[in-house]
Length: 268
Length: 270
Image (cartoon, rainbow over all chains, first blue to last red; front, side):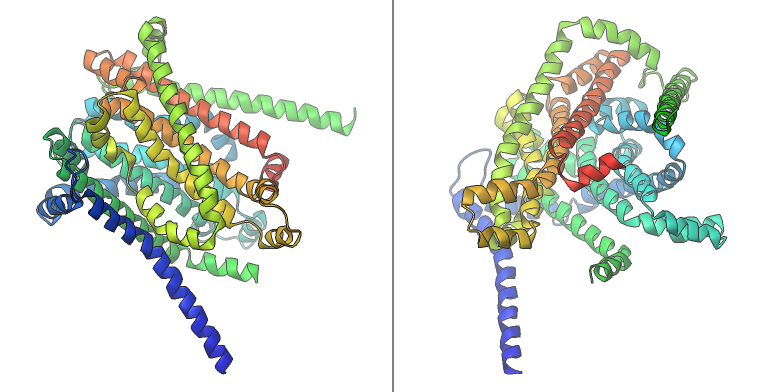
């Protein structure tokens, strides 16, 4: 028993050390930034303390309601539209190989249109406002979800599909209980790519023809030479981006919890 | 007639049918686009019809601004991508080969890579103005992360048994890198390069459109301000065409270079 306890102790020590190592670099980096920039007189790289003051003044919490919430709402709406459309169309195309093959060139081309290149046209078409941003986000994020859903549906073990049809499962049950779950690891991977694209699209759509949002705040801080304010916006985006990724990882491990178990089982 | 011959013929017929299907679907999509604009469902003040775009393409391609814009975009794209590969691959391989370094850098890289590069456009504008240099720095910042992460991940995934064998045979460091680490990490790095190539193109056009650096993106804004919608769409289509070409070229290259890799082999077999 004693050796086992010692073993566990060492393992625990090792784990704590590893966790410390993971935290050490960012802590050291921030400390270095703080110290090295403290006496900075550069217009473009102000002291971190100034950035933090700006951050507190702008983002805690006077501009949260006017800028952060609209950005996140538009992101959520666009992402929700893209996810729904991507999964529904992707399942349809995945089950109809002839159709998806015929549409492949059109999809390849549409997917390659950079969202940012459509920004002027979207502004002319939909004007300034949430509608334009939501449409642009939906357009930018739908492709990875669509293509991954098609791949996921195609990749299902044919035996599973045959068993389902030999049990005469109804079409709806087959779609919801067999095909959708089997394709879900791929779908979720597509959603993860889509999320980071969505964050990019929301920022640039706020940089042209917008009157609020995080991207608008960063750009207008730059235009009024409020450099610490601009940096504060960038820091906020880093934090928000990281939190969104973290939240998505939580969602992923919840939705795919059965999948991880299966993989561990298969590995033995 | 031999069975193989039969199979070949039916293969040719099905591939011909496939091309016909694809052409029909593409034409149908273009026709729907045309109808949507002509009928007024989509405002003609914002979206040009395919026929107008084709008509405008002639004069755009003939103009001197076209060649210059295309060259500027390709130059900043290629240079930015190349430099980010030169930075990311060695650092990624180094960080990935040590367990401690992998752990230490994971969080920081995860954090930095979630900052959308477009958020840095205002900073780049302050530092460099609306110049190609601004686009270049932005591209390097944006496309270094995916390659770096993939390289780290690739080295980290080297088969432990193979690593032990290399150690048991006391392979020299150089040989170990060349014949164990690089081949195992190559497919991961290839995926990273493909991601980075798409991101670089997006950032090149974004920097030009939002920041005014010369290139296709700036041409889109210019035509929009001139109110010449068909010409604006010529440049939008051009940016998409570049994206398609980059993607196809990289997939082809990947398949050629990594022919030995099981993932590629099974892809060819399927």
